[in-house]
Length: 163
Image 1 (cartoon, rainbow, N blue to C red):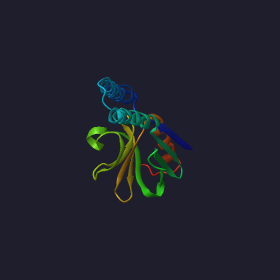
Image 2: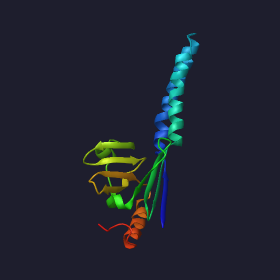
Image 3: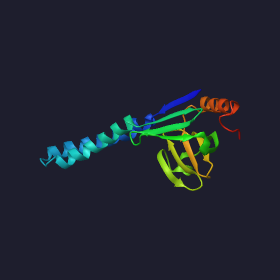
Image 4: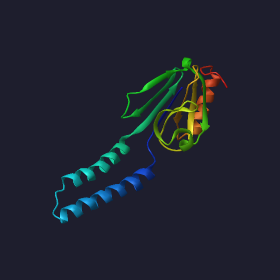
């Protein structure tokens, strides 16, 4: 049994916010060029949003869950992390509020002692992990129903203790 999911950031971010920034930067570059000013600073200013847009296109959250534990990574920022089931007290799919609980989407490590950290890209559903030492961590999911069914299968097979 294995569950895998690869998630990217929401398209609205890529299709609205970043192209608007790129357009503003291009306008600034053209304006400076027509005035006869140097364009080196303006060119740099125009390339930064393009670099950010490229980064958002390649960023993704990869999750693999099997009978040994959970492996996840936020590409390209980390190589990955494996959490064995022996370190987890509870694991369940739940709805959450990304803004009020974690301050938004992305790598949200150490956000608060109450909610713990989170890795998420979009939406409001995630796999809540409660470690045996009391710490909490949430992995976002775009396929909550599928993940819930998979977790129930792990419970029934005795890999994860039922809640």
